[in-house]
Image (cartoon, rainbow, N blue to C red; front, side, top):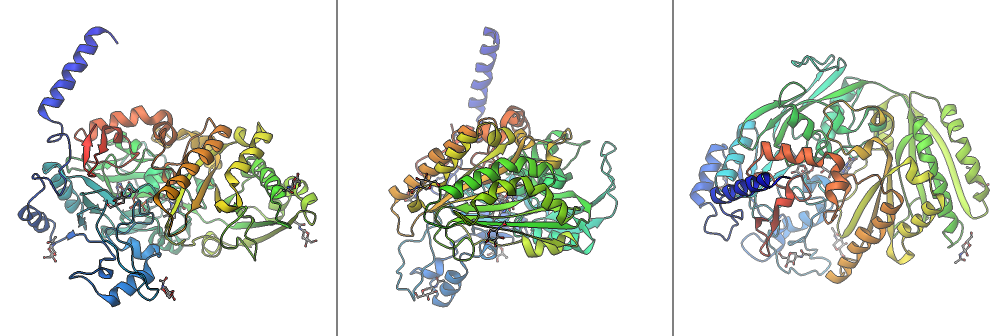
Length: 590
Ligand SMILES: Cc1cc2nc3c(=O)[nH]c(=O)nc-3n(C[C@H](O)[C@H](O)[C@H](O)COP(=O)(O)OP(=O)(O)OC[C@H]3O[C@@H](n4cnc5c(N)ncnc54)[C@H](O)[C@@H]3O)c2cc1C
Ligand SMILES: *[C@@H]1O[C@H](CO)[C@@H](O)[C@H](O)[C@H]1NC(C)=O
Ligand SMILES: *[C@@H]1O[C@H](CO)[C@@H](O)[C@H](O)[C@H]1NC(C)=O
Ligand SMILES: *[C@@H]1O[C@H](CO)[C@@H](O)[C@H](O)[C@H]1NC(C)=O
Ligand SMILES: *[C@@H]1O[C@H](CO)[C@@H](O)[C@H](O)[C@H]1NC(C)=O
Ligand SMILES: *[C@@H]1O[C@H](CO)[C@@H](O)[C@H](O)[C@H]1NC(C)=O
């Protein structure tokens, strides 16, 4: 950079500071004089037709005070770990980053401590139209209030929550779910002539799958149907049982309606606002605008062949189990190239059985589409031959096959499980390419030793063979998806829990073990890939490279163009490095 350019940029920097890109350096927190008055909040409520909610902790009924209510408290406690319960609350989260008002089990003799909103939003607009969304955005911008976008609250990294914020809750924004047998685009450059489904708001895949099933088509959606169809799942990537065959969620979006940082409703497609279209397709959620509608691709029905593999060690020695897992991991790229995809989990010690009575073992459910069981068997044969010497000597190995006439009968039986909400655990992940599992098999085996943890650590590994296939074809021109997805066949999530009564120091030690020791071992083995941002780690110091790869700079320039004032913020999202929370939790410019 020449000296005059340096001068220019420092002058521009000075100007920005003088005019104050946002008012002052921090967003207004509830304890600040600049926090909007009750009268202003009331007027926001009026403009949004009464859709403003003063948030309160969901378990407030368990604590002494005017809201205490034993009956309600019991219901809250019994429902706490259900995804549907958390999703139906404006402050409900699948992975609370810091639970500051836990439910109390009075029967078990628990007594209430303190109950605060903690890092949750202070107000939420339960939007029912793009006009509610635009009004909330303008309010947050004009009054310099932190803004948070939430759909289901499934986020693992805390991107749909934030201290002292106004939340735009898109869950009740539901303007229709419609099927088109032949996609009609206003945009001439769109090559898609197949079927499509319009997702008009905060629908979950539960809702979308019903429409797909009724019309005898397949859509790419989450393995868990309670995930939101146009929120973080899609904008961060989005894998599911059909994503190997048809591409990840971000690649399904034909066009989108987006409410921008200045409150305008735009269409993002290959021929209008194509930079926003590019960015929301994989460039991260909560950053470029509020997505209020998408049109996604739908595919002709497929039949499905499923393979179940279950492996357990015959003694306490889990070394052969890890040998078998190394054989399988090494085989995934070839199996995937032949059409296999699916999900699985393994552990050398789990608190609850993995299958039958085994608390150590490996299970997977893999499948092929539109093939035959004999094709699936013959494809697996070379791998089976490597595993069989262990069967009956050190391991129990079971392999079976089942087929389904259509995708939805497969999905309902083999997928679609709702796990309980995550309480007290740390997790992170890494993507694996062919070279990561085939170039250094000794290294792979040592890595498995590290990520298996010690028996006392109760570590669990969940792998997702969800890429390859369509994802490895040349992407269209509008994909901000992490490029590592185009060479990585699968993702592995490593997770550890802690005891309910763990001290902060114990929790921190578990988090460090996951973030650095276990993820470090995976990174060493897969140095050229990255991390699926939706299943990553809020504390990842390399999130820019890991989550966005070579797309980061272009995403950052789009962010600067469409949201110069930083109306939208979420941790690890593009542009978030310009902000940090101060000791009181207020969001301040760096
Ligand atoms: C039980 C469970 C199952 C899961 N299963 C899968 C799976 O099968 N496949 C997979 O890929 N991932 C899965 N995930 C991870 C999932 O992709 C992320 O949690 C994702 O962030 C959820 O998006 P959401 O919109 O539903 O959640 P939210 O927590 O509501 O939002 C997540 C992010 O999206 C932003 N956002 C939400 N709505 C909008 C909007 N309309 N416009 C702009 N930004 C928005 C939020 O600000 C936040 O940054 C699962 C997570 C859980 C908890
Ligand atoms: C907004 O208005 C509705 C309907 O009048 C009311 O029920 C609700 O309590 C109001 N919200 C706030 C935060 O005052
Ligand atoms: C509360 O405690 C009682 C008694 O220990 C137990 O039976 C019940 O299952 C607990 N409820 C929940 C929701 O955990
Ligand atoms: C959780 O929140 C409480 C109350 O706001 C705070 O005192 C505590 O430090 C927080 N813990 C963490 C790990 O952030
Ligand atoms: C477990 O088995 C492996 C070989 O299968 C052996 O090398 C190792 O020493 C055994 N470990 C223990 C603790 O016995
Ligand atoms: C492993 O051995 C058991 C017991 O002999 C047998 O029932 C099972 O079919 C074998 N597994 C495979 C994959 O052949």
